[in-house]
Image 1: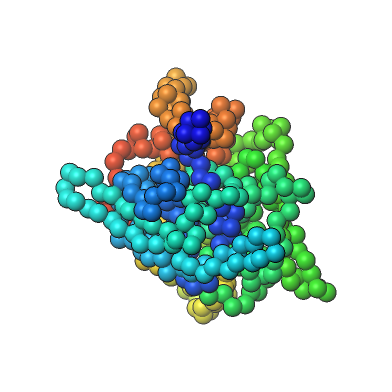
Image 2: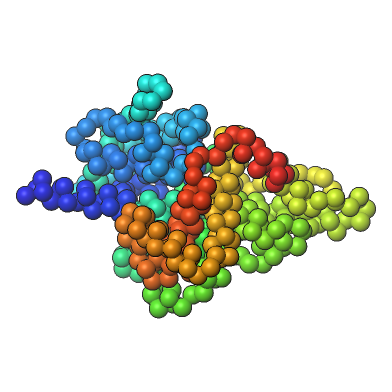
Length: 443
């Protein structure tokens, strides 16, 4: 009976692509190293497969293609994958547990030894990984955990939003829905995945990280939203916590397509005003940290107003260069202003992945435009094909959203248009196509 129950549990997890994530692993605060949004996706995919294989196994092996698919990696670049694995191996975490009156502190790596085996042309590439022994059982078979859906988690555009999504799931059913209360430095490390933050300017941290993540969560999560609670000493904010508020289904049904498919309409309009096509502006917004984008746009707008300098030939190209070089400075004087401490800087590998993500979102936007121009009969045919081919594989919340709202649902529609893009333009993007795409966008 126990084996049968275990088999049913694994089958249900596989159907919904959900991972039982230890509560302690949700708010990871690195003591050394850094974590990125992509490394968090990879880590969740590792956990999902490890739990399918069982806690009794000291090592876990799957095909590399499975990991890439479940992490929503969107690239066959194993060097990029290796760089994120190295980040996880170099990240030191602390694990606190208590039992009765005793306390136990453990400091360990996030991930153990990893092997990628590439046997040669025509043969399956595999990846094998381990977890440090002190925390392996707590990760693979946790006593206290939260179910996290890989599909919805992978839709988050920022690391902070991904953390808040998992944190919201954890406290959704708790009395009052209140998360832990911690100081600013603690939250900055948890919401950015960085260990090198020594001080926090709260105004910037709130503006560039927290508000953006909350807006993202509001748009993408259909079950709950989160509210920031500030705890002050005098006029200074010293500590933070969040309240998780369940959304009423009625309000979801009444939402219009426009409110679900953009996060900040005014920012999109400002991008259009400097010469970026609306579809491209939405794509750029979808793949760029909102704080970085807003700061770069303000820099371009101030530069355009500066009559002492030569007029910009292409404000749109200037913006893309500002984003690439991260030089949003003061009032068009060419000076560089530091990026807020809470914003990690992407490396070359991260930029390549971002470009692939931008390509994917661009093709999804093209697929959306083509779909909207199709005759009603052709639209119905595409929807029927999607429901026949892909709907049974969707996580239950996304499938419910699709059945209720179809293309009017932010979460379900993005899945549909990704599927439509892959059917209209099958195969991986080539290096030549990616280069031409980057050059066409001034990237």
